[in-house]
Length: 334
Image (cartoon, rainbow, N blue to C red; front, side):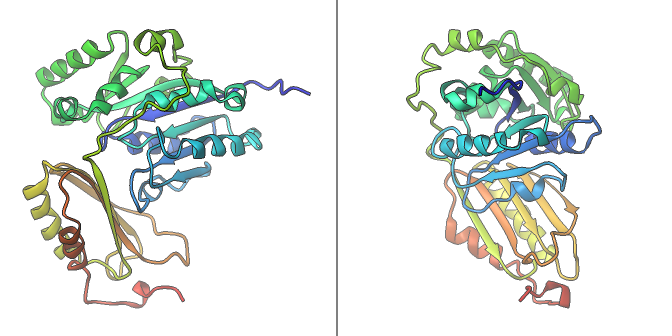
């Protein structure tokens, strides 16, 4: 007997490293809109951090590590979607947050070339978050940034608080040169209306085929910058906050041009909450987030994504931030 249920709408959330995708995702998961979403998060790196940066919500969150969703782990995407279809009554839609290095073409392609996925889901829209401050640099050194704009049905032009009106207008002109018909919403901290992001029914296959006639061919054609690497480090003792601030500030000032993205989940002595640290080049931010689930090891992790990274130097610097103080709360569970 054939399945007569409506296909599940899927929103692909993309954008270059540090543009603000996770901030937008957290807004979707916390605002009251009466809908439930299954979330698939893809990270580029050895240790996952993004799953900890996503708010603790009722939605089902699936994390795909150590690969780009546009290439090596696309089979995982198909597998997870297949598993979700077995309990589709539990959610109203699916959100796929891609790594910042993903070419969205093969991601979108998955929803057309895999027969089971095509029957069960409907690609609703591709939403690209753009960092207004750093877009010109990204377009110069990263072809993925241009592809993310070209495939977008909606551009969230983020971090408007970091640019002048004249700079914002210039960025919009760059975007229009790539994708003349895309809707652009200006934002600070991804503060766009949720109804502008979800349920748009905006994906236009004909427009994509005009840009990439080979779009529906099954051969892989997603590539990302091979010079960009991810390095991740983990320690099982708390971090001295002052040491970390001094180290990371100096590091980003010195190497910020090469370090595209920094993300960390840190534990400080005597503090149950975790500290979420994020940086884009030399612009850094951080805040406390709720404690992990009881029994979770108190391990501090940091991830660097960039070019010309020195693994031993970064590892040594992070390990030198370990605190000499230990409280009962900091001891690892047996």
